[in-house]
Length: 578
Image (cartoon, rainbow, N blue to C red; front, side, top):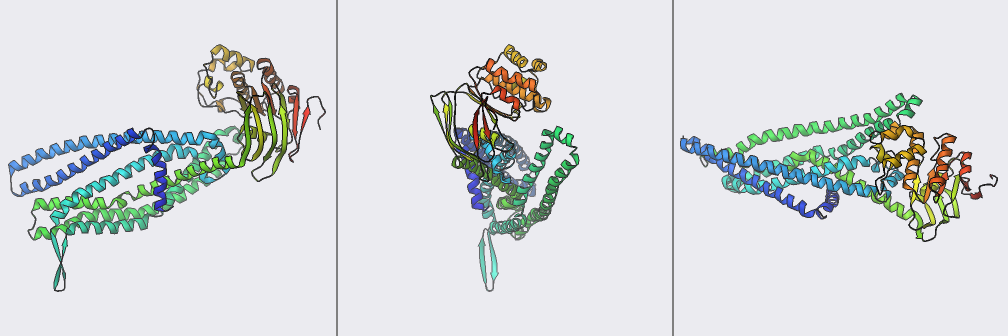
């Protein structure tokens, strides 16, 4: 990515905060940081002047002047400590406020319109690891942007302040050109500029590969971490398969990418370290060398000599921003690229959904659900379900059946608005509560009470109600664990998790309920109890189920058979299977 494009991308990411509702707080803190940096530069100028005075009184054996100089130095250092402390405090306060705002924004964008789900459908590695983008890259972007911006500001202020001092102390250097002598005004300033320019050029040439290498390193680290998390989430399945060796091979393959890329990084950084170490140490003696002619000609005294050296070092350091910050600049550029790509792919996911998901949804006062000319496709364009048109009355019960891969679950995703590869019209009853329940329900890391009421009740649920429903759903052993916080996705069996899903159903009391093989892990007797509880406790709820078991036919009035070739057939309950 070109430098101009990187800056545009960085501004696109940053400007949202600086022109948000929090802009007054943000700009206020930034102005305080700038003012404190001005104070630090001013104190540095005073210390530079102090050096000239201090070494002059030493050269003149002036004891009274020496004591005054020590006192002035003490005051300046105390002031420097105070200002530096507040500068660090306000910068870190601005950092956490900006990070908090940006994290909330990225979370909102990621969760809005189910973008987190649509990103999975893109199947692009650049869209992977959104957790790292939000948790790590946002923090890096804020910290590096503030650090680099403040460093640039500090260097500009430093150069602006000390270049005047250095120019005045430089005098005029006459360069012999044959019979003529060319006067060079402020030669120490030009020497610092040329020295920094050479160092900057060499640093960019040597360190340029770091941008891509740092980008790849973060991606490889995230892939390795994700592979470890998958084992934790699927520990039981892997243990049954005795898949430890295969998982180890996968881990080592991901880790090998980390090692190989890291070796490339340290090779580049080794060369950069050689250059920057040579540059920084040579600059110490270089400043003395370029200032020495005036001293040995007796044009400046010892105090001015030290003042010149200090001013030269400040100016040269100010000109050396790229050299001193190149590693951070490379890391910042990689972070900007990753965050910008994340934004782009979130926009692509939403745009693809809006362009290809051509289901027209309308809410009408009617009580039933009507589907008109619904076509459902696979991502490769294969038409799974062709032109399905039907009306489901309220208090309906429908079982969707068919061979594996025929599109049963995809059909439910289409009705839920998740599947982007579909078209047609859906007329849904207005002001009705709809609930979709997947085969494996989500178990958040929280109290069991909150697991039962997920995604959150409109009003608090009394313990007596929870206990009664737990008994109904054959979960009496969990009644006394309402306040426990565990990884419930691991602590509960799949059958228990499916019964927890029915607890949620009975608590939420939806008008329309869609179940995607929600009893596949239950025995037939427990399945019978779960399904029979629905008309008993939710008599006005319409139930649409996906399943394979023939026993499910007992709990539904009608069935919808899909053949996987685009065909479908609506059959009353007591008709013979086709």
